[in-house]
Image 1 (tube, protein in one colour):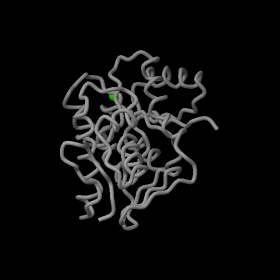
Image 2: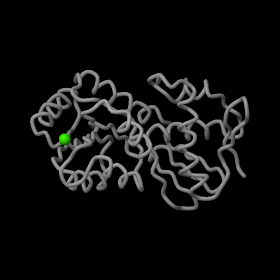
Image 3: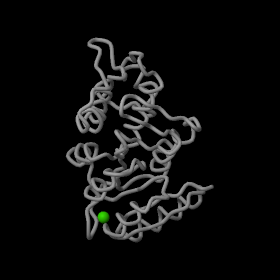
Length: 225
Ligand code: CA
């Protein structure tokens, strides 16, 4: 089965070019030229990855991402026209998995798509984890707390997955960087702390539980309350 990619991009020339290149690589591409159509398609599910432009008519890429993340953990790569720190920070907060700044080389985009899809292929089959009220179905990438769905980014999901594989065992920041991150971000181990905060916000804080624990000077551990 080819991977299905949703491309939300209003510049038709660029969209056609990307569609063609991804087609050569064996991906199946669906295009949307405006924000509302993009959101409807993204929410319909059935996509392995979403490429999302930020400046769109109808509904901005950020707004689409914000609404999508309420119920979906599908990997999202933002296409941003500016190499703007503000866009990157607010996009990360909103739940983007990665960024490509326009104009981009197609090889760079392909590398990021492969990286975003890689974990999906290597995830074990039939794996499910429970920790307190948290339940994670790995093949379906479904995360629930007390039965309520939680939308995580690809990276947040991978981080949670690694913590759960080591449930009750303290893992160091270095271990997490090595096992969860494909690209070594320039932020180093601080990146891990940022993503732990994102996860806590969506799980511990949102549901009033305490599962993800900091072990001062060592790292993090997930365990039953
Ligand atoms: Ca645009």
